[in-house]
Length: 77
Image (cartoon, rainbow, N blue to C red; front, side, top):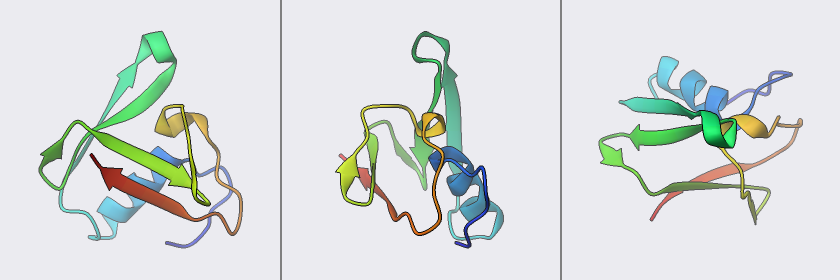
């Protein structure tokens, strides 16, 4: 995907879905964590984690704003 200022890991997934690169996506809000969380992607529910530039992030996907050149990887556990 092309870099856009202000994009976070969740909004990146929404962009991928809009471009047809992901079939389905459900993102929910966890107020207690003050973050969004991927509940389902392409039919796989729960268990999604992500890393930025090879480092796992102990935060929700909406809490990290991407920088130009970042590599985001999603993994289903």
